[in-house]
Image (cartoon, rainbow over all chains, first blue to last red):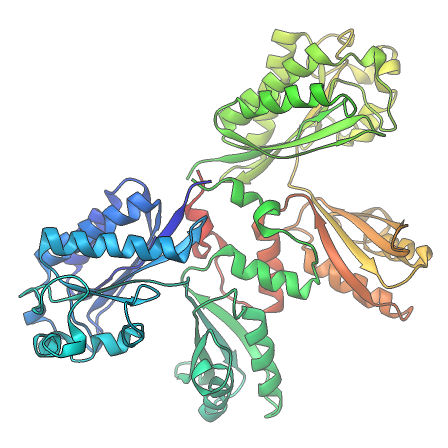
Length: 299
Length: 299
């Protein structure tokens, strides 16, 4: 069956609708990929696109979108709440079907090379594509942002992976990478006590001793006055949704707090839900690849 | 997005591998459909194929497979444990994506008409395509089987929906229909007491007061000496898997019996698993069509 890859470019523009529309048109004009979702945040001044399709389609889309963004976005005039260093700030590739992480890394490298050769925009490789441990983490790579980047690029350890030690004057520098699909997963608690959500977030997240592939914070949903454990599940096969859900429920119980509901924001692979169904239904011997109809229907 | 339909022809041949192989080759030669699964049963002397794809592909595949089966299978020499009345005995169409049941019924009628016009094989329409309530149930339609069918066709109420009151001499008569996807779902109990599985089957199945879209029997898995509630879920949206699973668990508990595991035999739509995940994860506000990645990847 055909290889399927996801591509999630993040653009440093969330306020001018005509620019976002031009990028949408560009995305929709590329054969072999579908624009699955896009959203803009005015306070962040940033837009996130989700594309999915063939390797060739995603490769072309990432390039053409970067070209269009470089024409329309000038980082010298950009301000917003979200840290950024490029017109296309980040562009991860995610293996969806019949594709290894290594193939995604190769794809990221081809795109980064073409973007520098044809558009003169340098880049760092990050996460699974990173060329050193220090470059895996996006926040570390981006530190200094657009304004501080020319200085940072001169430091011994911060030469770009593609391009010279100098950002593109208006389009800056990009982080291009490969990673597992990320699921934005929240669990709402029947309490207005933020500290309970924060304690539970510390329990389930990797950085403070929890599940390896879970990032979590506690926050308040102000208009409903309920506390939420807000999570990014960065590898749903390594840390499945049901396991985190059950632990959150278990930990909330010690405060006499119930789970109101959970929610997935944006896109999820069907398999992430199937994994949870298999757990709860005690569904043994199930072969997802062979037994799920939709696997035979992908392009 | 494109309409997707499933087609599950049942052939009256499960013993001659060369005949099954010829049918497989025919199925694989039709553009626009994939042969997802096939299995033969020698004691039943019957094979079941599962195809999925475009409306045009499924329509052509159903016709070409009937043509090939009529060339290779002669009901006058057929014996097996399973009731049958045609070389292709049954051929249901199932709406999978962006397709209504009405469109499936129309598809069934077009196929039935072409099969009679070009191959001279008559047919009954059954289940959702049935032209009277009496014809909805396959067992009722098939009663009399190949050997008794010419006599049955002369009865007032049993004229074929397509064709004259006379079976094809070697290929017999077919049931062509439309129905919801069927999931073969079993729950294994931690007991060797068959009567417990039988009692629970009566509780969950429609015919004895249970869930509308559940058919169930209790049986023994002889080699493991465990009792099983063996089910066909004939509309997983109307009667979801998790609801039946929880009731089986609840009813088994009164006998002090645990559920060992459940199993899905063959193919399931991903949505049937997602529905159960949504229940257990208390996943609210989830829009399956918009939020599941694979929905954007179907042909």
